[in-house]
Length: 373
Image (cartoon, rainbow, N blue to C red):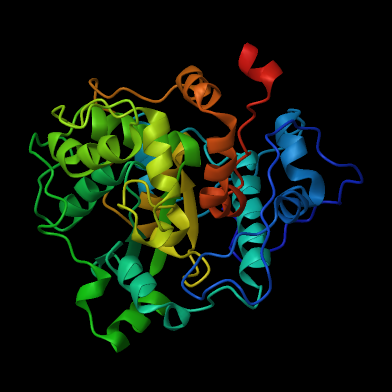
């Protein structure tokens, strides 16, 4: 895996990328953005940075197949063990994974180098710093920090941490996940201890396509979790459903996606529930220099890399996906976004633009022609 600060030796491409995405403008008046608000970079800046070196274009057009896959780094006992049990092939760390990491590293460096972006946790507001420290889990035995993001396999990662802590015998133990007990959060340490761990520990996080993560949270919380229906659903229905009879009972279990989006538009990103708060606000990748940013789309491969990197024992593995889990498919996401009023989507995307840009995700294509299919 390429180191964070290493430049990837590719020649720059001379032409723009051909893609059709929804168009919207984000206007930022100098001096008008509060320090506590996330700066919204222009989409043009995002496209220029991400397209640098023509790397995404190469991935899209399948031009990587002719390139020789470099051997994985750190081939050790764990890697040999995983090959023996058939869970890791010699070319697991393929070149497109390395390129994606470098795209993200370059983009983060470029975006975070702007003067109005935070450059350390001390440059964050108290609320931003509190949110960040409450989402970074610590393991002192294996010297790593993990910033957990709800709806990006964080429950399974917490299982792994509990196994490493000796609390669970294996990740397959059938128990209801307690998201607080037997876990150590960075917020529980003193300032000097926090700084030491941020400087010396291996730091990682996992990301997911922003709209897919948002839809997953909506379907799970309002379709299955009664506490969320009562706490958020009732409020959303009362506030945004104009056709509701005033004296009609409200359960909050039938919130539409459009109503949910309207609620998000009226909510400050820094005060959102963690399940739909932007990843940028949860993990602050400009204030914390993460050593590895894994993808939900390549969860098994990237998780194995992290376990190898932290030196986890060979028997500790990342849990397999549960049979009852209902993933958000491309078709499902397409349906929800295309049936959402265009005005709402145009207003929603700026809320998550930093997640799209920093982590190299395409803006959704919801043109009339695309949605028709």
